[in-house]
Length: 90
Image (cartoon, rainbow, N blue to C red; front, side, top):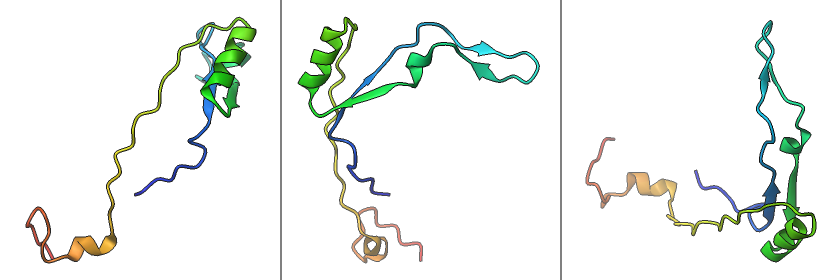
């Protein structure tokens, strides 16, 4: 599978949970009264996200995106005679 890059050029601010989740004893559902866990704020640039966090007094940690290792694949490579591993199973 070759995943795309949609929505990968934005910076996201995610909030740390303030309190743990509660387990409802009868049905086993998990719940929490901390609604900040549901928020994900997106920004165009890293500087905008940092400025927002500083402006609102939010402690932040920046995680830089990993460099993508792109492996070009094609379906026809499965049936090539000169396969790299040399195993022909068909």
